[in-house]
Image (cartoon, rainbow, N blue to C red; front, side, top):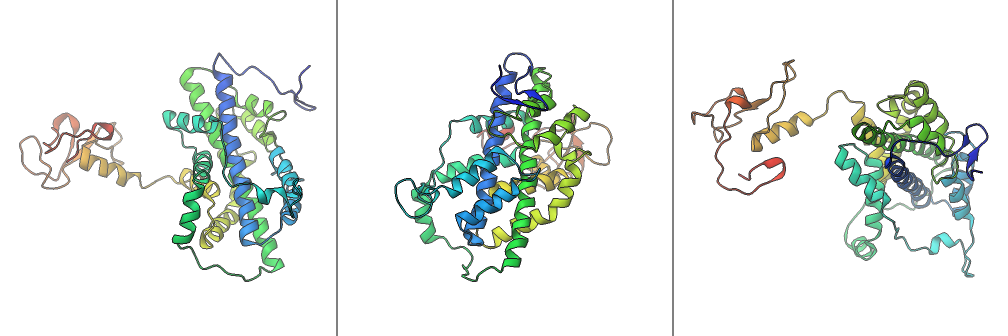
Length: 358
């Protein structure tokens, strides 16, 4: 008998692929978990620090969100319980307010981020969550910095009920959109590793077995399951035409307002902000990476490809008079690397990508 099961989709176990694939999926599950927990904590912080809401008020808000399909999850459920739990040592208020703000970890989030770097897969939401735990561990430094580093002027002005309601709705939408990004990044990492190691991991099956018996179980997994059932090779969950693409398009304005509101008032929302940046970067057909590549070509002769050339030709530009071609004459023309000799450098210190320090 399986301990974790769902009525509609059966036991939350299944075959994911050859040896190693199941452990990999579990690792990424934990990375998504890091992201989800950090996102909820950031929304809690905005509610507590900027909207001046009590734990009971935040719990009631989260509880109402937890009744819908977008945010209903195990983590939201236990967060409501945590927020309402009175101190168990006889102190006034809730135990949450007496917990030291230093988050521990077992290492799976770090492994996920390391793996993403190895596979060149961007997972900024999960990375921000990991960085958040690292920063939380520097408690003594943060206490000292609080007295030395300035933020925006604080305001004791009470937020009106109508303004609070609007901000809370924005927060709900921002939390949902950011959660989608966290899942999208995790699925992208699994998909990339699966292709590299020839595991053939079914992403729909990952969503199905996460529906029960795990920390990230949520109603959101149902549309994720349907997205990958409809298109098993979907490049990114955000592009799912059945649900997520339209849902993100509808939420993006509220998402932006939350980030702007928090940053303007000096409240860090690293995971929500990283999620929005991921969304914005992914949806742009042209990024400023052309400048970065030009800089690499300037100091390291790493070459680049041109937008007006359909061939796979690697080009290099003599960017200034300090760069010389084979005949030691300055040139402003672009050349292929086959005809180009690297200029002489005055130092032989190796840098990234085999560059030489000029």
